[in-house]
Image (tube, rainbow, N blue to C red; front, side):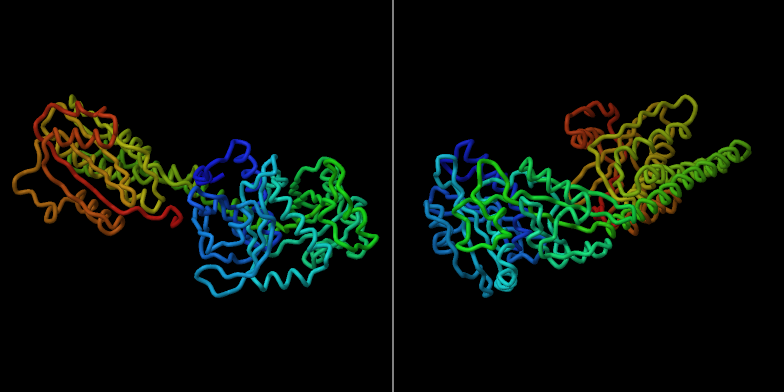
Length: 523
């Protein structure tokens, strides 16, 4: 139940449980009745609260957006307020605020075990759906009316975990003698597609498929809701949903045909008077999902092979670097190896699940491990730390971020900490909501006085600028900062002050990359 229900005063724990039971049945009831359902309760100031609004999935809603949590006055909802004050159910034609289209509103009281009204269930139907419903056979209209009353009484709590009923789903009604009293045209077409000749008049459920009869027997025997998904030998996938239908003596019409006798009878104890069966053909959706699964598996295998190929290329370059007699060539090949491996890390993540967003914190840890193995000079001790929360980004952003982190760490090792026997590099990640900030700081000597990041022509810095501005659409700032500031930056990223001992050196260099988040659905 939505927490807003707690705003309604004088509700006991039993009252809240009853309202929760009503809410559980509202979803399927809204779909079958093709109506917007509003569960309302009274506030202390003689105003009403919409504790839950359920839009139908079988027809367009009357509302542009969900109205849960809205407060209304007696002038806005006179019938609902009358029922909330202890009145009986009623019906009227009215208009929704902001719309001139007339609707039919039926309101049912929700009472606790003591018979005290604790809420109201408002059923709002547009005139077109209302008129179309009234052209259907009386037995089905009466069954829907009983379903609405069962929902208001909290008798459909078992329907909470069932699938929704869609516009192109079929429906039919069975009585206690296992006779089909009503079948929609969509249901008849679904059965015909399975090669069954359907005669609505007096059709026995046993003449349909075996699963239909099995489900009807279970629901009539237990009174529980039931849902079954089954694939037939010819490849059809159907989802069947069965709802128990109960009718009291007060709900019986003044006239009935003999065929209705078993359905329209006085209810005895917990007996079920009939079953409402819902049919959904899931074949196309299942086939599309299977095709997607196959494509996903192929793409994951491609990513796995690309990762292996990149690592092979990196291994070949390492061999070439070791055989090179030029120190500059060995350095350039080492940087190329790191760039290739930073991209291979992305493909390793994607080979596990291409649709899963990539955790940049894990990505940074992997890159740090790679850089630590192939950089630095003998005797130099560099401590590289990663700070901050898990920030998840789509692969399209994770790839340039990995490259940027790799280049910034390489620059920190090769330039910022050059000539230092010991040093520290801190990578701080910050999730700013709509954007992400990545800070890479080192405890070196700071930037040269004449350093201009816009005019610097080093390959690493050119790569960083291109990735940040063109791919990430972000900004790059490189500056000298006091180590106390860098330590505080790491503390803010960690959120627990664990990085307070970042370094005892007075100055350092900080590179800050800030870029907007891209939707996780883009990739």
